[in-house]
Image (cartoon, rainbow, N blue to C red; front, side, top):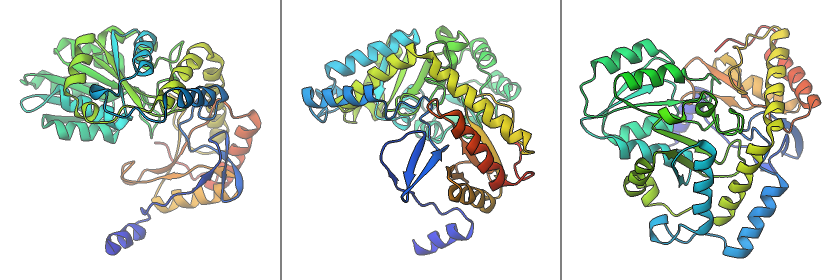
Length: 386
């Protein structure tokens, strides 16, 4: 173990944790200092929203701290049922199913839908949970280049599999790019394949009511399943999948990550119901989030940093070498901005970066301060395009 840790250290890949004190917000306290936080997925700023906190407290007092069992053995309580129905309504789907996390959902869904004799078609930059779901399914997995629908089409045309499943993130979490969902869905229909879309970083962020990129593009009826999380833009914890009633019913029976896991705590479920209501009603939060993201990128570009075009509120500032990314993050931290370095294997070799994510609850002054600090940390010609 010591030798493996030394090897990680030598490659600038050894991880450590900073301890955050207090609530997650536009600023966080670390090591006794307040820093502008650009290292969170709390896109809408709901993680410390008073309405969610009070809802969680009320549920704790009324129904207790835990569900006590897996959903099929008595852990599926009144609020769980209500939340699933609300999610289905929000997404315009027939049914929804709660999972303990996005990881549980993706691993459970993929391995329940396909197996030996089937084929999965997966974007090269898909989240690790989708990749592990593909592996656990024991289906044959074909990996196509990032967003390369021409390669996907060739793979689908050559497939003789019993079942074909295309899996893709809608928003790729480290690059901020969006999948070409309309073309993917067209191909899938032409080749009789299902589509599973991971909306983890699109839930709450895209769509008129925050229902995700699939909803914004009007593809809800053409996508077999959508996965979304309750722990990013919605500020809590857990995940869901939504789709046709018979598909969700199959997952309820066969998704091992669902069947063999304790149901979400009632307080978490209560907070999620409130968060969805806020996301649906308060479009101004999304507007502020996008405005901050556009201003952040524009400020970095104006200073000479090479930042890719904005497709989502995720702004990647690529250093390339892991040591450079760590140095940039350290300089930013010292100057009052929390923007952690992201290194392999989370991103491909040679693309270590600062992954910058503003929040709806940041002020304009927060964003301007972050631009000044990041420009100084990276240097006027230090950033590389993703």
